[in-house]
Amino acid sequence: MDISQPIVQTYDKSFGLSKDKPLVISLGGSLVIPNSGMDTKFLAQFNNFIRQKIAQGWRFFIVVGGGATARHYIEEAQKIAGHITDWDLDFLGIHATRLNAHLMRTIFQDVAHPRIIANYEKKITQLKQPLVIAAGWKPGFSTDYDAVILARDYGAQAVINMSNITQVFEKDPKKFPDARPLHNLTWEEFEKIVGNKWSPGSNLPFDPVATKLAKELKISVYVVGSDLNNLENVIAGKIFLGTVISPS
Ligand code: UTP
Image (cartoon, rainbow, N blue to C red; front, side, top):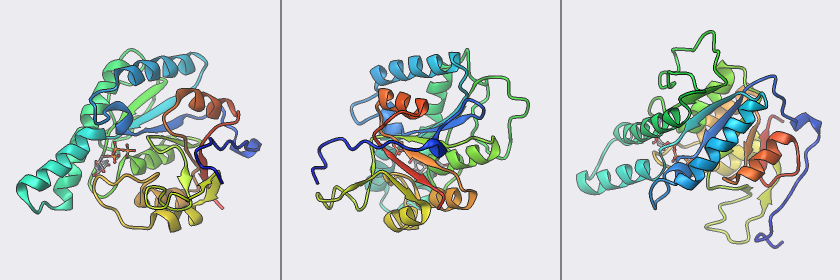
């Protein structure tokens, strides 16, 4: 199979999204802060996209990752200090997510709830705004897990995972160039691909701790990459490039 060609897949109505319930977007920090610095072009397009969708009646929770800031802090701190506990490494990442979340809240200040969710035990009641921004919470997992918590606590219909990973592959495509992309799979199948071990700063399609919870809660996750036209297709129920991970 030629994996350089985009693989498209249509889904039946069971994967259709509706405006009745909010959508959680797990926005990979690498899209906001790639290695080259802040991606203002992407942020400007994302800003327009979300505002357009809000105007059409959609509601969102957006939890943003730490991007290159998190990774640089985690890697460089280890080089300088030698051994650092996972707890400290995770907290370096969490602070990066908080900085990025504040950036997002600033961009969306006129439409977003004024409080950034950083303590997930303090739930927002009587939400009036169409958008809430969230950051990392505590050590032991990534913002993917936080996205699943948001979906559970605010009755979201699905989690959309945007990052530099466009699709789930049957095995790591960096190690195995012949790996085939998957269009849809169950949480049990996905667990076999990502394993069950957390390590700070890891770059997986969806983190193992979040996977366990999403499986328990029977939440569907759309892994869709970074392209906003593709995201438009996901939301509109059209053909898109990506992978749906769903309950069995
Ligand atoms: P993410 O891994 O979620 O951000 O958080 P990212 O790397 O930008 O996301 P992707 O890979 O592009 O999608 C950065 C780091 O912050 C810590 C973890 O170490 C994580 O790898 N973190 C984040 C936590 O410890 N707890 C959280 O709730 C969130």
